[in-house]
Image (cartoon, rainbow, N blue to C red; front, side, top):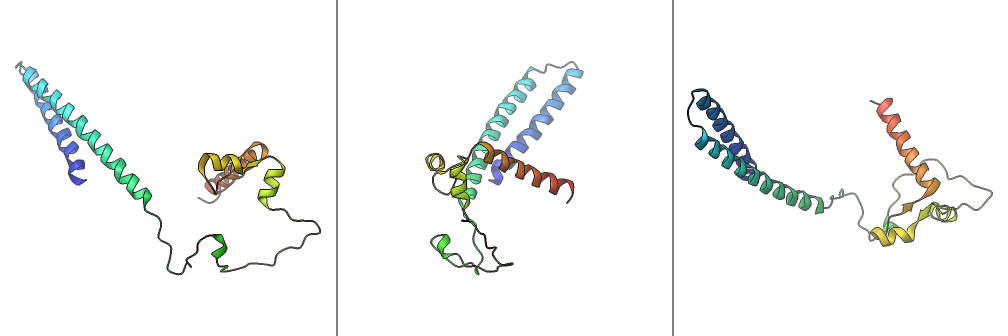
Length: 153
């Protein structure tokens, strides 16, 4: 990778040097056509080197993104959320005089969360938000950004 990074820099430096020489030769009234052709050739080589570097950097990025985060040794191994361990609880759960519904039920009742569409789009563990729920989600995110960028600099 280092060689791919250095090559465009070297070509750019060489092209700059040749361009400067071309300007000096032109000021002296010399024929600059051979120098101009050389500068153009260096420009083409530079473009090719940059393209190769871009491809390599994209491959490196893709490989790095495929490497999962390594959990801390204290994190228990489990197959799914049922194997999670409660580490700390704050306060006591409230008691209600009505049936408490989870976000999935409420979202489906109000046609704001579409899990079936999400499965078709991305697979499991995702949701498509629609209507007022999508607006609420966006408003809460914007509120958080405004709060933290405005008051907690």
